[in-house]
Image (cartoon, rainbow, N blue to C red):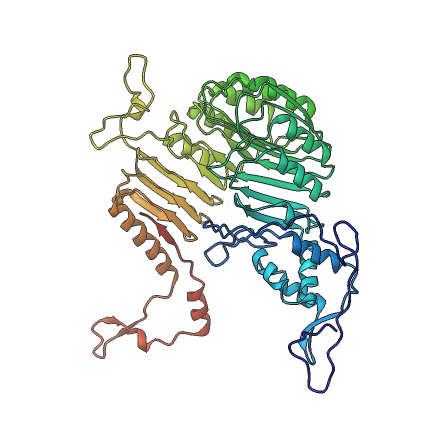
Amino acid sequence: MLRHPAVTPVGRAPRPKSRGSYNCGHCGLPKRGHSCPTPEAPVPPRSSHRPRRALSFDDECDGEADALELVPVADQQIREEEEEEEVEEEEEVGWGGEWALPTTCMVEVLRRLSPRELTRAAAVCRGWRDCVRRVWRSAEELRICVSPRSEIGSVLRKCQGLTRLRLRMESDVDATLLACVAFSIPNLETFELNIAENAVNRITGDELGRFVADKQFLSSLKIEDCTNIGFLNLTSSSLSTLWLSNLHSISKVAFKCPNLREISLDFARQENDTTDLATMMEYLGRTCPRLKNIHIASIHLSNEVVLALTSANLRNLRMVSLVLGSRITDAAVTAIVSTYTNLELLDLSGSSITDSGIRMICNVFPKTLCRLLLALCQNITSSGIQFAAAKLPLLQLIDCGMSICRVNNQYQYKSCQPMGPKGEVAEKFARFQKLIIKHANLRKLSLWGCSGLDSLYLNCPELNELNVNSCTNLHPERFLLQCPNLKNVHASGCQEMIIGAIRNQVSNEFVATGNHLPSKRLADGSKRVPVPRFVQQLSEEDKQKRKRLPHCVVHHD
């Protein structure tokens, strides 16, 4: 057993220290009279930035206490750890005497610590340093925020069993980072790279293609701010998930990923983007036959792109998300519903579809569609939303934020509303609209920015989240909630009267499910009066039932 030298039992000689290797851990020369030419890396000063907990295995940690920065490991500490490699491992670690903790238990305790705390624990003694080294080696997932003065390579070298890596870079990124990750983590399966606002991603398409081709086990790749990727040439037999954001002017697309299941391509909102989206859709159909989920966000989406997607013969598609395509009309909806009949999610936010397109969607997907997102669709009305809620019984999510155009109190319409052939506002938007939804399975409803609504009636027993942010024209007397399981209501930007109406209806709904005060007739038998609370004797079952009552939170400014 390895004991701490400061706490030695009386009458027992301390155990002599075991010797390590006589040679240098870097160059292999004898240590005596030898100075290694490798300079010690200075430890950078503390940064004012305090990101979230760096090393996390199962849980997401937030807050000031768990927000930790990356502490790089100096070369001296690496040399000391390499020198101890040949030392015989101890079975127990303790502080002296009979108080000893098995190594496996000690490793499980240290596993809950953050990287900074692990570095401090490694300085306690040799036994603790060995346990910390085991923690690093057994880590399978690393989520870390890298500040400009930090070195990620010294940490990755210690995590030999790492398979999932998520980095948030606060400095510029280039191919050096990809080379470091590829060299340090040979069995990488999931890689996510997030870029801070003040940082720039300088990785090119050629460098990204080499990285993907070298990682044989890579199955998920998510990279932000891909502004310098001029072309996509990805070849991988293991890649199943690909997320790239902020793309711009992709000149060439070459995917050879037969096992790709999900792809998300988010393009920059720039008019000078020259990406040929139609050709990209055709190429995806030829090279990615197993594609199930596709998400494209671009202001250049049109009916031609949708027709190219439908002609790609991707029969396994379950999720189609085509966002910000203002040139997508009901003709594109006709092509989608005639080709893909088993969709579970359909997102056409920002398109120009009308209530006729919603009716086509409802007629084809009554048994499969679970999530329908039609935000920023300015040509649909509350009638179309009501029709979707009535004809799609499996719906769990509806998002139609900013879909009902906003009017002011004088009924003067904004410039964002559709105009008639003579420059006049369409007659169907001539007054406020009302929305009535009765649904048995709906769980989330988003109506953010629908200030054209003045009446809202909801009868959804499973609804747990409602978003009515910026619905400024809702009338308290024409607002009714019959949602007993409601947990969160977002009402930022609403009038004070509607916020009060939401609170009253939510509290009354919960009070109605509880026990009412019993009544007792007076001695003369004239009338009944409620019994005071201190007189009531609640049973244990009633107390437990009252504790289980749901609690709804109203979020507002």
